[in-house]
Structure formats: C-alpha cells, structure tokens
Length: 248
Image (cartoon, rainbow, N blue to C red):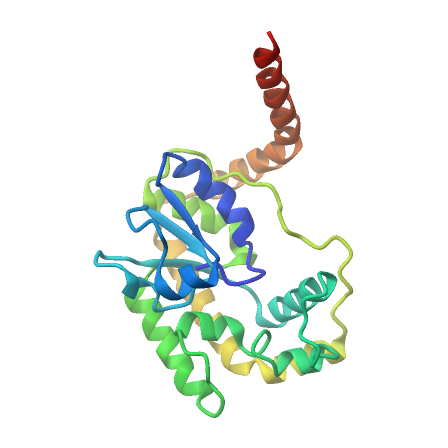
C-alpha cells in the first residue's frame, strides 16, 4: 500500500529487484485497476495507491505492507509535490485549504482504514484503522525508521537481495514548514497523529523482538551509501556494454 509521499517509490526499487521474475511484481496505479483489481491476479506482490479493501479482489490470503510518515510532514510534502506539478485542484489556494481537502485531510488514516468519508467520525475510524493493521497488515513502519524497517522486512520475508535503494521522487527545493503551518496541521491531523504513534510503538516492539544488532544497521547504512554513489555509474556502464555488444 503506497500512501503518497511515504517513500513508496524507493521501496519499489527494492521490490523490483527481489521479485523481478516475470509476474512477480504488479504495479497498480490506474484507477480502473485500483477499483476493479489488477489485470495480473497471480503476482506475488502488488504495489500502488490502493487503500485498505484492495485484498477483496483476490481469492487468496493477501496481507498489506505499508509505511506511515509523521502526518504534518506527509501533508506538507504532498501539498508541495502536487503544487510543483500544478496538480492541485483550483479550489486549493493554500496549505490550509489542502488540509481540509481529501488530498490532505488525514489521508494516511483514510488509506489504512479504507474509509473515505470520515467527517464527524474520525476517532471511530482511527480504531478501525488500528484493527485493520492488527488483523491484515504483515508489516507497517514509520519512514523515519526506514533502514531499520527494510532490514526487518528482509528477515521477515526472507529476501535474498540486500534492500539498498536510491532516494527517489524527492523534491530538492521544498519550502520549509513554518511553525504556523505545523501548528495548523497538528490541530487538523490529530486522529492521524494518534494512528501514527500506534504504528511507531508497534514497530518499536517488533524491532526489539527481532534477532538483530546495531552492527547490522551500521553495515547496511554503509552499504546503502555506497550503493547510492556507485549505482548510477554501474547503470551507465551496463548500458554502454549492452549497446557495444549490439553494435559488434
């Protein structure tokens, strides 16, 4: 479940390598696929902006993996991202409007609960979202612990490849979130903030129970930095040798 602006594009790199065999990974972003189910129903992993309830399209046991982000930051990042692409609806004039629009109003909560219209019942929906996580999520974590989460996912799912990644789909010149905008977001997003803290505590407990060491994380952090530096050159070299072999 790729909630907007929660490192889903970076996760796609990891999943693509791990499930790269034909039919292993199906991306689901077209509205018809989200609403009616994907064309490929035998894939191992589905990745997309679908919400809770997507599993009802399958006759097999399907569980969710997702990430959450600190709600104030997620809303601000999503607002600036859409604004930079000129994709904001005309009725949204500023960040305050965004926070009261479906694009920005407790969006992560609505994804995880599967309930779109939450006005007046936000706290009831929070409890539904927590129940969904406890029952139907194989994994959920805060992106602020992204590398820890990827290591834990690798162990839980038995991945064979190292889950290194490039930072992707990141705005390089996003304005800073002002104290006034932060306070406004903090007020509007209280239900989602409660769910976010539930996810933080759940992940912390799961991580502590796992057989890991701080050294594992340090090594992975080093490997990922090296990957970010070397991968662009590796891709260029691979493309060069592929073209050279075609011309020979």
